[in-house]
Image 1 (cartoon, rainbow over the protein chains, first blue to last red):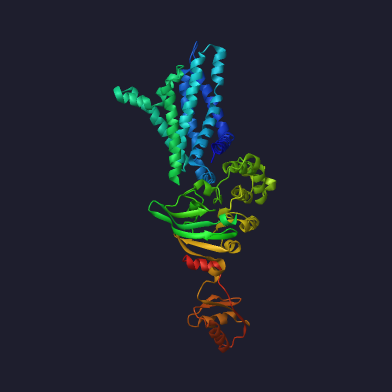
Image 2 (cartoon, each protein chain N blue to C red):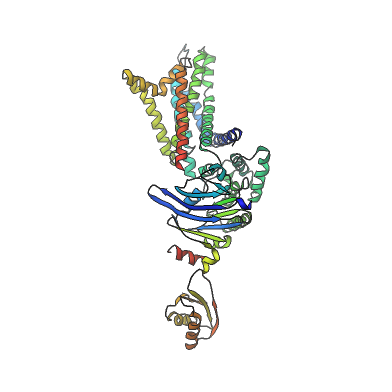
Length: 239
Length: 306
């Protein structure tokens, strides 16, 4: 099979995922909901003379995590519950193509949802003079976090045919990773460093300060790769 | 296509934990024939079909589809198969044409051939007028034809159909059976069904599975008549009930039916002579007596202990 055929298959799977989520009432509601909640968070966060939107981005990361949980339940668990996954897994496609296609599709839906929140910093820019650097890098961090969260969600969704179990497991893993940073902040030494390194929150801080550190970028890339590898392993083990 | 269309299943075993779902299954399906897969619920039919189409892997044994060993080249083998899973949901938001186009992309159909391939599958599955409506708005029968249509994308030589007529109304059942019959002329078709009349109508051979084990692989006609006992249909002038009582009193004779004609069965090659004598002795006028074969249903129930 040529790489051109592989890419075509991945694009087909991603396209179907985008259409099935993005064009559904659930998808439209989720995108609109994220934009609405982002706006509400901005109202609570705005202060006179504010130059950065750290607190708003913090709220947005949580909302994106929740959206990733909801969207990824549909990638495998919901499809398996409905039986439609059989059509895909009996087609001449590899587990890698399925995993990459599903991840690309869900990550695109999350990215589109994030585009809907751009109105908030644009509104702030009209009212004042916020520093554009941290806002741009903040969005880069959000996109990377979305891909990583989606990869974790896809792997856990592939492991069950129950969407509720998938949602609970993804929420649990993301909260655990998030909590690692909070727990670590009360500790010292090596344990603190390890827990902080595991937490997405500590790696988003740099983005919100306007930097693109290789360790922070690397963290989300590694989490996405682990999630992707996990999805492939789960799909292969199911056979 | 004929040389490459066969399905060869050799000693397939598939377990789920300690439970053996399919044990040592061996059979073949040739091009141009429809083979029925029969068995009670939980017999392992769907597991076997899923192993054949690559959704599950066999723990032991070998499956060769269209000349391709599924273990050596799983994607190549899957490309040889069109699979219609039982009751699997289709994307409600997509039209049949959009869904079949997606399937064509998954199957690697070249962009310049894709439209013609999809149109051919839509035509073969008789979807024409509904091709551009959302699948969610279609009748169950049409959705089932869409499921069959996706299996036809790329014209795979082997079709695996799991309960394709379940839940359809009589007209839809008739249409779907006619479609399967047509497909069976060119493809190797493995049809799993609970409907014995359907299997008797469409299939040349049957594979009967019970508790994961293949009980028999035989032609439908052999299976229907495959008993050592003799079965007679006896028509008498009136008094069918009395005739049934007379025949039922004979040593080793079982009355299968009492009216309007009497059907009796016994493991005795001389049954006809004994029955005729008994009826004459009882003063009953014999109109006709002929040997009949059993039905597929009777043979099936005998095999699976029903």
